[in-house]
Length: 371
Image (tube, rainbow, N blue to C red; front, side, top):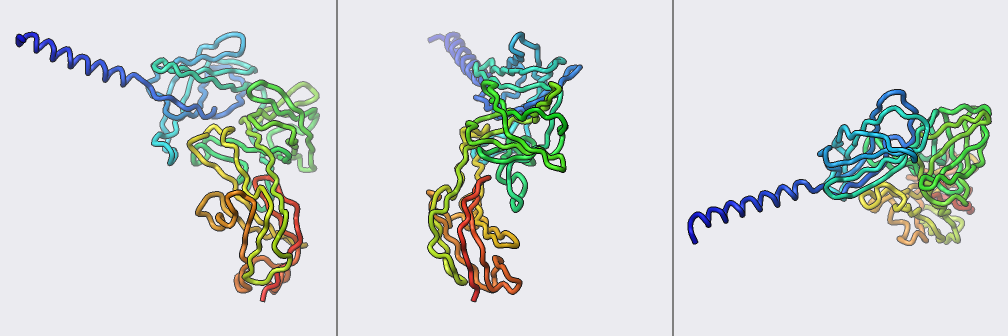
């Protein structure tokens, strides 16, 4: 073979390798859309920037096509910025990203954002609302001895840049501020995927707090929460919420009713661990939020709580079996007693119950004599 032919072959090989490398560089990974920074926005008179969170989102702005639709027409929007946050997960080497796009002025309506990668053709759509009035203070149902939101909030970033709110069937929840309490007509949940609406029972207290009940008939899923008035106005919670199923713990039996110091209490029943449905979470597959279990001793004066952790390795976590059907707890020695009725800490007499997530078991009688 002539030298000129060898040179041509060598150059052709280099070009093929270069083209192959360029092609691979142009291919984006499959991205994961998490959620909008706010799922309900106020109308805007001017151009605005809207943001959402994602994972493995190609930072090359030119590799994306964004379309915004109000159901009747498409609205021009422009991807403007991709930020990499310092937050991530143990299960992935990727960092959380915050993505911004610019949208023109628009008013009330339901809007669908469609995101398409021009390199992989992966397409994703999600819905946000624009409403004339919003509120951002709602407390998922919890009890006093728990840190507010400890069971009912999970976050895709820390500190809480983006939170999802977990509500439960058959729970009472509170809107603490941000709404008008005069002239309320109804409180609604609207299913995010089909806009089907459900009216909720609600109550107003003397402090102006509005509490609403999510009945067990509400299916699990993602919903928009809103308050509607007799004058035709309405106000919406700025985030969509996740309704989880009711898993009420049940105490079937205890090995004894009266215990002495350092004896072991053994309770049998069901649902001693709340199993979060991760299919409903935006972080499915990369995060593992869990809910703790509490054993509560209650007498006429107060409640004493014992936490059984969220994760393996937490204190007392292994005291509940993997099926969530048996719980054991060693009564402390008198010198370490913190569950007592009298000032001298010689005994406790009252009831005990188990709480997981929002729901409590029925209470059963128990007595402890410290020796």
